[in-house]
Image (tube, rainbow, N blue to C red; front, side, top):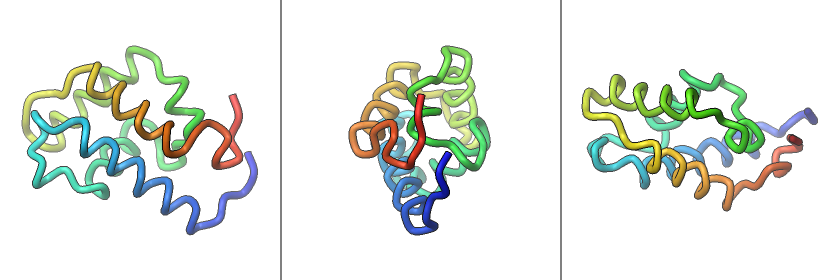
Length: 104
């Protein structure tokens, strides 16, 4: 993968966290679902260098793991697989596969 500028990476992570915060609440408390906190949950499951390509290729097990990590992190019920998939779709709409120099 091509080297990504620090600013571009930060912009992607901000969008990633925002999209997830919008889609996993409820059950994640909206006031707690900041972009930073949501991105932290995602990186715990998918790693610190998650890309749009990674999101597009998630397995059912990874989607389920994300939902469970949101539940554990925020001490609430897990968001549904549909909510996680909608958050992924919203992120990919803003940052499509290839937008960070990543490829399938």
